[in-house]
Image (cartoon, rainbow, N blue to C red; front, side, top):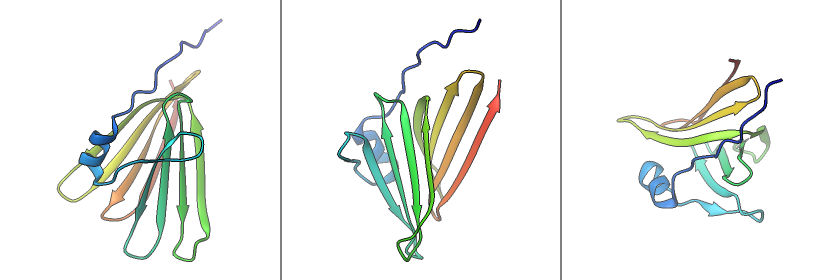
Length: 120
């Protein structure tokens, strides 16, 4: 029988987030940290994360305010931000049971989301 080991969700502090993406995280009603990104076409991507609950949520809203995507996932283990010359990314690693994965969000120069969840 395989036993899941509790893994901490490692997240950067607010100042590190600001330095990486140029935005200060807000708090929602549940205490989760929230970042909102907008592209040139008026679309928004709302990213929230809760270190204690080990969860993340990504909501993508089009320029007319219609929600196009809503992803909620638990068992996050690490949140990191990368800043390159032309793009900024949010990376979230997950590990749950026999699966491991990464959710990659590009926030500049345009919005995109890539999700990979694989059996170990």
